Image (tube, rainbow, N blue to C red; front, side):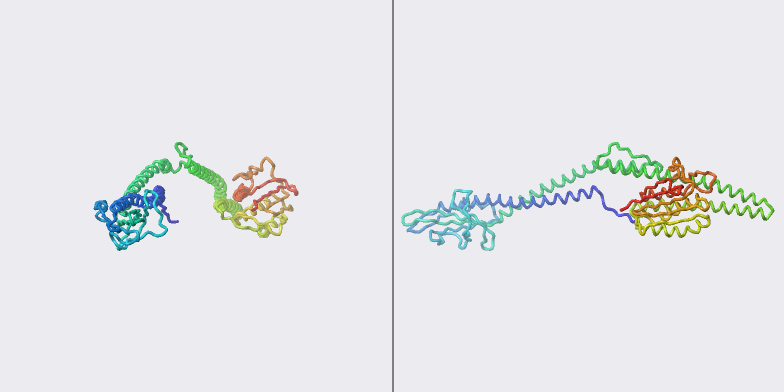
Length: 463
C-alpha cells in the first residue's frame, strides 16, 4: 500500500490553534469596532451638545420675534476636523426656521431623551445632503413678554470623523491582537517542540537498535501519554521475539528430524547398490519407498504447521468464516473411510443436524483429519473409532486403543514429542491439533472414553 503522508503533528496543532485563535480575533475585532464607535459617539456627542448649548445661549427676541446670534465658537469646535462638516438649524416656538440650514432630519417620535446630560436633548442618526450625520436636538425654553414656549436647536455633524476614529481603534486592536496571536503561536511552537523531544528520543532509540536486538525499550524519562505506546511496542517486540524463538526451535527440530531418516534412506540405497541380486534390489527399493512415504508425511506435516501459523493470524485479524462443523465432519469421515477399512477399523460418525461456529475451514479440516488419523494409527484391527459432533460446538474423537497415561497428556502437544521413539510417527499430529485449538480459542481435553481408549474433546467458543 502506498505511503500516505498526513503532515506534521506540530504543524497540525499550530494550524488548529491558529483557527481557534481566529475566532476570538474576529469577535474581538467586531467588539473593538462597536466599542470604538460607541466611544467616538460619546466623545463627539458631547461636542455636539456643547455647540447646541452655545447656539441656545445666543437666542434673543426682537420686536416679538425670536432671533439667533450664532457665535463663531459654536461651530469652530469642529474646525480641527477638515474632513467633517457641521450643520445647524434653529426653529422658533412654531417650528419656523430662524437660522441655519433647512431640512435637517427631525428626530423620530420614539427617540428617547438622553440621560447622560442634564438637558432636554435627543441624539440620533440620519442622512442629510447625501451624508450620514449624527444629530442632536436640543429644546431651549423661551420666556419673554408675549412669547413663552420651546425653541429647538439642531446641530448635525457628518460621521466621517467618528468612522475614522472607530476604524483607528479597530486597526490598533487588530494589530495588537494579531501580534499577540503570533507570539502565542511562537510560544506554542516552542512548547510543542519541547514536549515532542521525548518522542524524538524514542524514535532515535528505536532507529539505532541492531536488527537482532529485541529487548524491551526502557521507560526512563517517558511521559504518561507515551507510556502506553512504549508498552505496546515492548509487547509487540516480546511477541516478535517469541515468534523468532519458536521459528528457530522449529527449524532446529525439523532439521534434526529430517536428518536421521534422510541419512538412513541414503545408507539403505548405498547398501542396495552393493547387492548384485535382483531380489535384494527389490527389497531395498521397497524399504526406500517406505522411508520416502514417512519423509513425505513428515514434510506435509511441517508444511501444515507453516500454513497453520499464517491461517491463525488471519483468524486473529478477523478473517474467520461461518463453518458448519457437522457437514465438515461428514466429508472427512467419508474421505477417511477407505483408510479405516484398510486397517480393519470401524469408523463411525455421530453428528447433530447443524453445528455452526466461526473459524477457518482449512484449519478445522486439518484438525479433524489429524485427530481421526491419530486414532486410526493407535487402534488395532477390529477396533472402533467414533467421530462425534455435538451442539453447541463440541467435537469428539474416541477410540478403543491403549490411550495416553495422564502424566503424558500435556506433553503430547509438544512438537516432535513421541511416546514411542521407535514408532513411525513424527510427533506432530497432536501438536498441529493444539496450534489449531489455540488459533480458535478452543479448549482441548484428553480423557478416557466409554470405549476404554482415548477420548479427545474440543470445545469451541460460541457467539
